[in-house]
Image 1 (cartoon, rainbow, N blue to C red):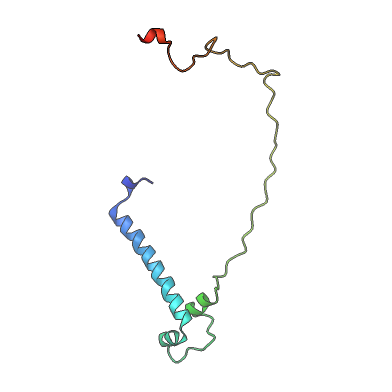
Image 2 (cartoon, rainbow, N blue to C red):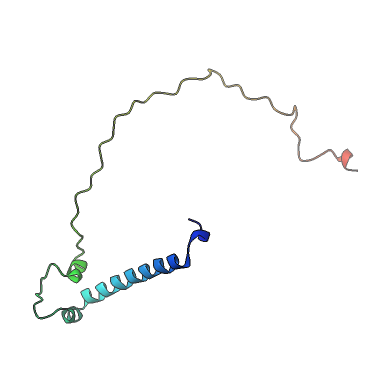
Length: 110
């Protein structure tokens, strides 16, 4: 996509999403590193080992559960070798009997 096809709104939106993601990661890092700040976010029902807290999941490097990824089995294909075209190589003849050196002869320059 060239720069001419981008709109200012799309650029602003992309930068806004990037800044939002950076702020989210920074906030999760700060709250995961500081237990007192983490406790201020929760009410009195929060337990120490709450597995559903996003900050705890971020601190423990937990990923969302996903199905195991596997590559599909390759399909059998019929392969054939390219047919031989010629038994000998015939290069094209040179354009000059003696290729020119660096320029025209000096007798033509004067």
